[in-house]
Length: 290
Length: 260
Image (cartoon, rainbow over all chains, first blue to last red; front, side, top):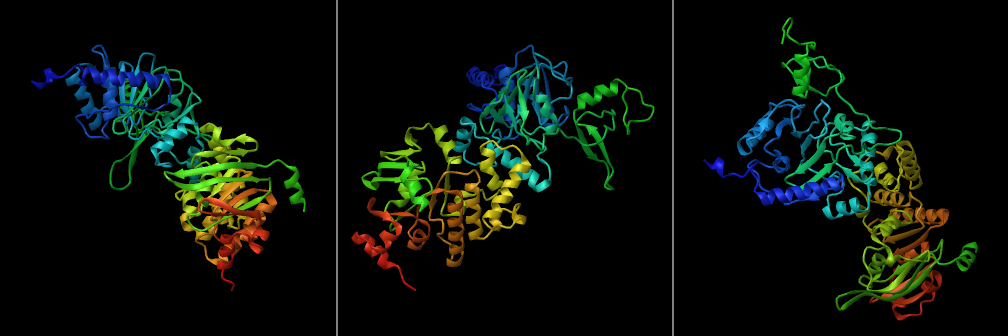
């Protein structure tokens, strides 16, 4: 009964207007963190309240929504957010990356290259890349303002000094359009190259921290590194055990308590469509046909 | 003697005129003026509350003075934009805090601490940064194998030396020091002073050093300014001021030092 009392896509029109203004500003200044009046959402902080607000502000009744969590369509977070929008917006949902117009994601960029007209919405826990090095918000804002990004390299220096290589494997800092240094949310650094020159609109919403930032289509996004320790996108050195893909990002799954493990694509849609095309991996059921 | 000749022929590196800072109705410092020439070390002494720290923080840009002019290399520092001022702070200027914990990043290794200023001015080659960090640790007598230790694992004297290395790595021309030997025991103080004196001579640094320890200025400073209640009461060559004090307060200060 209360369902009918909701506005389209949950948010009231004033809130949508406010968030859309923040989104436009974020797109106009790539990588800049735009403060916005983040609302309480019917889910706890850390479950994608920022992403949900951005998605709600972008959705139109004609949109087709896909929600992924760590690349998977069927995890708790993805399922609950998808159901939330089915109820409050009544939009069509899909698990297929190519069919979706809006994709809300946590921790991954889909393997399937995105196209013009698609919107990728990231859930962001801590939008400030300098936060763990400089706890003062006044100071980090000043550093962004004056492009004082030396400190970001101190973090990478520490990585090399301690581990012999840049050990930061996720939330790897990038510089957008040669200006703002941005935390691309905790995506694996394997996905960093996909941020650059992407035809889709990439929007980042941080609910608790009340910040929105964005990467417009076809933007220049460079991962920070040293001349003698260049950035390298890394993944587990295996093939997917279900679809045999050697080029996709893999999850390691422990299958018993004797240390047996398997590697599977973290992007479930990518893996399923490859299996549907007949690709097979090491642990695929023998003789099974899709 | 060449030092003195340089001082006479060159233009002042830092020129301060009529510097005044008030805290409400009270004065922090009033009407302070001096010229600092390249390669010169100026000591500022005075008791607690005499305005020497206020003066130093105004000079170093941590506070904005109410009146007066500060010219660095002929340019009016107070008219700088914040971007220019901060560029100065991490390039040509350096600031050594009394407490090394204020000047170091305690969660970052010694090498990272020294390298930070290099990276802040655009160094992007890990091997080169590492090499210069190792070199500077050596110059301040910290063993090279401590490069990956955090400052929290260092003694107070080592932390202070690390802070000095971190500040000098980009080759600043002007260094501000606020009680650099405060809180260290006397033997460590002596080593640190020796080190500082060597670095200042070798690099031709100009230094403004604030202290209440007359032994420190006797060793380091070419010239001395004595402050009391926010005003400069006496200034001149260090040996002259300390051996033949003219102002009553300076006489008191000099005679208060215990002779052992």
